Length: 313
Image 1: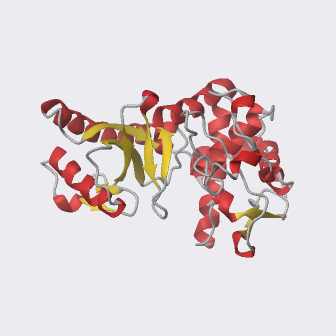
Image 2: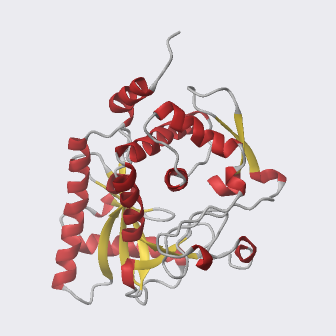
Image 3: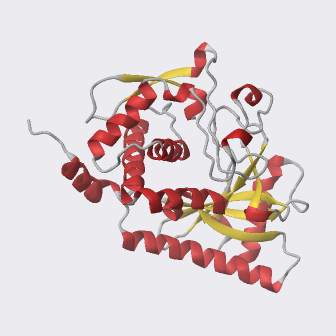
């Protein structure tokens, strides 16, 4: 049996994993058309409750898979105009989007738990429109509403994109390619196990952490082995933080994490109160129902990863 090396993995990614540029450009154009209609509505009616629409998600970051069938955008909503009841936010947003797109049918705007799904019949693509409660803060910082708890989570779409793009500039195309390869593996695992959870944002941040730490990315099998070995050897049991917008000394310590859960909720990457770059924190202890096993990709040795569910869901 011949060995699978960098060249083979790279060819596989080009054929099976990566979203072709011409298709990505069409997806971006579709989002731009939706955004242009909203901007026209805002220009015509400055009192309109929506402020702006920003393209987010994997297509915007350049980490989308060939299998992508929906796009992510954030719509900034005037916080004072939004419904006070969280359950009313998505239906209310759907009504505002219908106002801004009078040539589309109301049935094309469907409120979901955390977004409004906009369906385009010609392309078959869906656009998930996520509301961000906005009060005019710098860097387009605004609040997401967590769908299960109603907690407000401070975020910034431009800073998220800048974070990924800065790593791509520093580490080259290999950085995004390795993200896409792990996302492809995650997708395969999810098809076999409906309970499998591993957020794409977590994948991106783990690769950023490893690359910032000096991990060579030029050999894909070696880099992937290091990625999964990092998890197996307990890398997620330690705090991971980035200093793009804060000094190391200013980052909240692990001890204060327990007192400051709005920054570190279940290990999910958040933007702290100063709108800094996302920080990951993983709790060392959790209940017996909080653990599960993750299977390594087929090109790795048959080890299993015991991971904290709260950190990967």
